[in-house]
Length: 271
Image 1: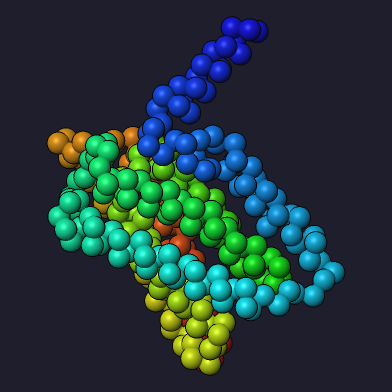
Image 2: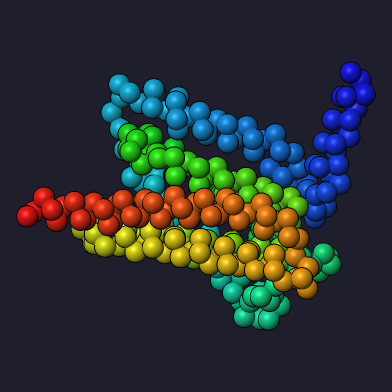
C-alpha cells in the first residue's frame, strides 16, 4: 500500500511540477489542479441542480446593471487581447501563422506572452458567470448541454494551455476567440441596454461567426499533425481537435435546428 501511495505521489509530482512550464506554474489557479476542479464542480452543481432549486419559488433577479458592467469588462478584455496579439505577435512578424514553436527564452516580450495566456485563462473562468446569470434570471432554457459543456471545456483547455504550453501555436486560439467574444459581448450589451436596436438576424450571424471560429481552429491545429518540421507539441492537437470537432458538431446542430428547420416549419405553418 505504501508503494502504491508513493507511486501515485511521484506521478502527481511529475505531472504537476516536472512537466509544467516553470514560468506559469506558480500563477493563481495554475500551480495545482485542485482549485479549478473545485470551481468547475461547484459551477456544474449550481447551474444544473442547486441554482434551479434555489430559484424555483423565487422571482427572477434583476441583474441589468451587473450584466451591463460584466459585458463592458468582457468587451474591454477581449479587445485588449486581440490588439496585443495582433500588434506584438502577428503584425510584427514575431509569431508565424503557419507554425509557431513555444519560445522559452526569458525575454520581456515572452513574459508578456505568458502573462496574457494566463489572463485569457482567467477570462474563461470569469465566463462561467454567463450561466450563473441565466440561472438567477430564471432563463433555464439557455442552460443547455452545449452551453455548459463549452464553458467547462474552455476552462480545462485554458488550465492545460497555461500550465504546460503557454505560447506558440496555441496563441491563435486566444486571438480568434477574443475577436468572437468582443463581437458577442457587444451584442449582449446592446440587447440588454438598447433592445430596440437589436435585429433578429444579428444572433444568427453571431452563431455563424462562432462556427467559423471552430473551423479555423480545427485547420490551424490540424495541419500541425502533418507538418514534420513544426516544433509545436503535437499532443496539444491530439487533445484539442476531438474537443473542437465535437463543439463544432454541437454548434452546427444548434444552428440547423434554430435557423433552418425552425424557419422551414414556420413557413409550412404560414401556408
